[in-house]
Picture (cartoon, rainbow, N blue to C red):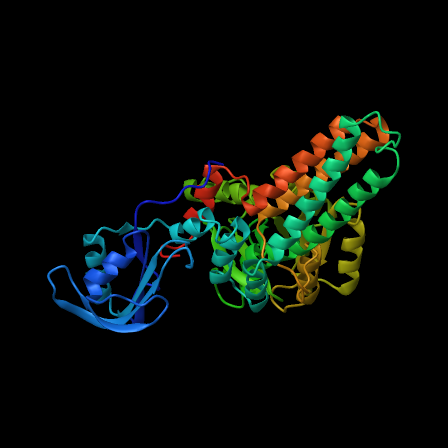
Length: 463
């Protein structure tokens, strides 16, 4: 990424939620913060003290009375001079005060720009910056606690330790390259292999915790698909606990994508109900089917619902093959046989036995009407992603972190292969450097401007 630079302009934004409230906060950061405070409050604010003052507009008219807090840089969240004006939470008052702040030289902040400046000024690393947004958006107590751990630096400390150990291993390898005349064979004395194996153990442990953290924050997307009247909407309603989708005996009732978000033992589930998959001449239904097929390709898991009461094993397998043809091999499929309340237990057992040969597919039998089989379905969904609903010490993470960890682990495994097979010191060192760069992308030591724009652009304004 480009070298970190000091920001020369002053930014401002409302830091509290929109609407009417008891208190609203306007946050200002940059070189003009203290001057703006003097114009609006007509007093010299004592650093890090709460001062009750009048807030005046550009014409000297009283707008409000509230509390002003001034934090001189670098001892502030952003590392710059920061001013916070805390007044009454009426939208008109807030707008008048913000207009005054802008009049005195500030500009409206971009989404996430306060956190971005904290990162650019080395107050926080990229993991901690993302943890701020994760904490705000947490959907469960477990997710909030994981975000706090990342914000406090737990995830960063683990990454930093691995990077330090990689650098040490690289130094050891490169010493054998730079000093070949030494009597000790650094590459075959077993120490480099031990260092690499220790790195792999560290990364495996970190990846496990990060995977749990990513599940807590992002959850998984489940796309419910199948033919019309298979019970897809009934399954959505049963899982969400409310009548989100219209259920009728008429085939093709669902014409569009219906989305619901639920919690399953702390795991966020993004449920997507889709139009029934079939050939249709109705242009509206055709569009719904097109959207259903598109949704399937973006699923973390496909829940293929089939009416077990009106399909034999051959018809079920045909539907399974047709649905799998719409997905990539990376998308796992759960085959859900619905309406088993209309079958005898013996018929259900026979049907499941006939379908056991379907590869890479979990088969669950349920009745969306009676609730039969739902406990098994819920257990399957959490087990399918190895989710622990009582994670100990996990930290907030994102998919980009998991990708970078996987790249780092792959590079270190490659370095191990170079060592054992070829004794190629230069290639061992190069693979270790590749792993180090992947991990540095997680903390932001090396990050592209496009990545930073994507990350901070997802924040709310004022944060």
